[in-house]
Amino acid sequence: MSTRTEDTNKKRILVFLLFCLVFIFLFQEAYAKYRKFATVQVDNTIAKWNIKINNEIIANKTTLTNHITPTIVANNYVNSNVLAPGSTGYFDVNIDATNADVSFTYEIGISKYNSYTIEDLNIYAYSVNDFNTTTTVTSDTITGTIQHNTASTTIRIYYNWLDDGTDAMNNQNDTTAAVSGTSNADILVTFHLTQTRS
Image (cartoon, rainbow, N blue to C red; front, side, top):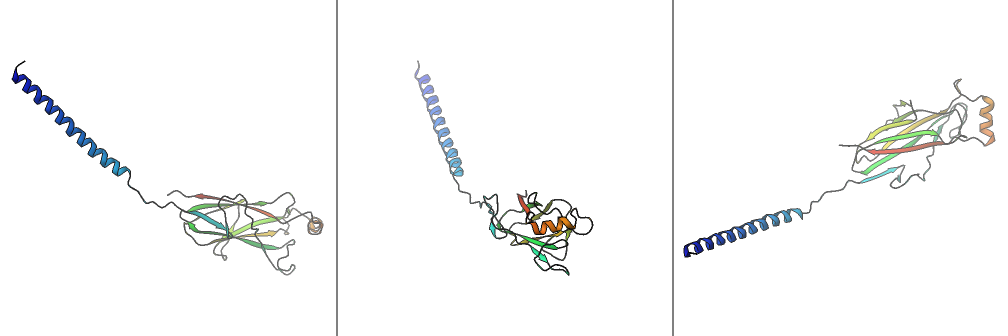
């Protein structure tokens, strides 16, 4: 083998090694940049979802312990806070979303509590914050949307004991319900809250 061929081969090997070193250096630089990028900390705030219904936090609960106390309006025939045929009243549901960073929809379900609930107990209207404006209840569900971080939304639900000719109970049934202790005026209120999508 000639010296010239050996010199050429040595040059090729040196060029190849130099090329490999440059490649390794560039790869390490690129990987180091990627690795540095991959370990950057991004400070994102996780949305809070802490809602109260009538001052009770609802997180991780299936049943609220606070009972809702209704107001029964006095009329010519019945004292206030006494339920009798022809009585009307209301109860309030207050939703505090101060600590909810996400807007949500609500579904409030209203039904008779059990088979002993007075048959003629009737939910007929509701209002939201403005108690001078009511909406007729057309189903067993009241729905709406609450914007995030809203301090207070009060939903007032109106009911009556039907005694106007459209009622199912006659006077004897009304009397029996009032004095026997076998009937009740309990209403089951359920809540379903769903985060809205942006």
